Length: 237
Image (cartoon, rainbow, N blue to C red):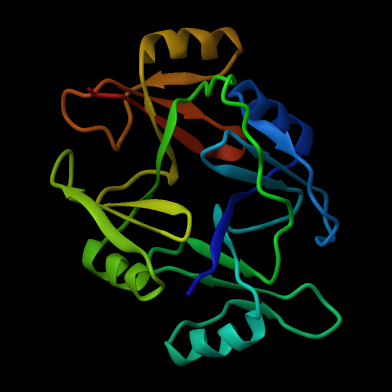
């Protein structure tokens, strides 16, 4: 359906400041192609990739790679998905953009803009293990139906600290939360206190607590360039 998840795409200007921030979190740069017209860099921690784009966009964007995109765009329209933007001509890099029920941008590209990142197993992930991309929703049922229609499947759910459901597929894990907060990457972070000490030493702004942590679970929120957030949750045995 969607193709394969490529990256969490973020608007970042100046690009260098955002790049150095994610490098401080142990994300490693990957070589990108020249398909895009604007300046662009990508980084990966071996679990999730982030694309930093010197362009205007309404918010974070989930970007997937879908070959034969022109054919699939017709299928999206038949399924009732309204395309916010569509570039599908022979002389341009084909892509479409649409929104999920909560206003989260989704983009499909006709081809990858970088090769799959290689991760040295000896590298340390400062944030821990990628858990999910956490997004707020007014209705889990409506959000789940939307993402299920695109091929993601429910894998976990709960009621604390608010109703939530996790869906997964196409290389992405998405956390749907009936709560109000900024969307952000969430990580399971073993030895959280030590990680926070390390991150603060690297001048990363870390606050105690997060909106997606279950009761009794230690957590923290990292403030990111451009006003975004990353959520660290103490890993439980």
